[in-house]
Length: 290
Image (tube, rainbow, N blue to C red):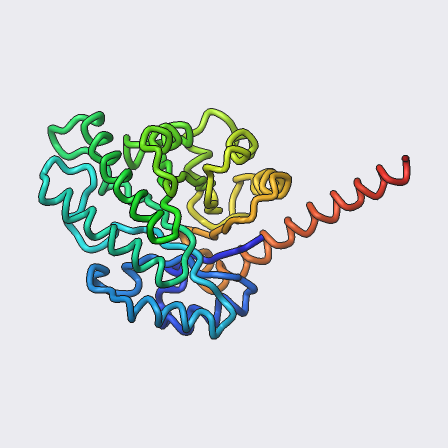
């Protein structure tokens, strides 16, 4: 498993210290939220990207991915009926794709619920159409840059635009853009999907259009810090041979950021080890019976 830590968990630390801590907990990568790197991420440069990649590499880490793409600067929306706002947002995201590519990231995750939701007087259908226009262009550019661009299904409580993997895949299929994919966020899937997250993965992973996983709990803490079942999800990923990134993305850092990051890494790796041990024992027993 390629385990990554969402860097906003450690955003109270300088970036080098974030890398040092993540490496000490045996993470393989960091998932970057651009707003943690600069108050105005639109001003991030290629030099900044090379610096992040270099510092991470010094600590044995990769930059796995980018997420929270539109948390800053304010005033952006891919759903906006204002063409100036829509165009400015797409231009900003094109820059984030280029930034991700220079960082060496594999994936960008497009969540940002407020910036894809309809504004007052706008229908959900119109907001969705405008988002789709943006995602098609962003997917094309991502392909040219050599990265994947994932539409993140989010719970309907935070946005009415794309709440399920099936809805995200419909956008991917309509745009026919090779680098556009979807992903699964565990807490969002548990809240939005008709079937369990593990069943969802077993249904859709073989199609190759799920390109990223984020693990967390319905209580907004990290995996293993609540009642959300993690083992069936990891077993589905292992059974599929999934080789993409798994990002730890808590929203509440319990009991504190460092302890949360450390606990989550150990918890997930212990489950993976137990699944592997169990499968090896089963395989050995089957061979013995034969």
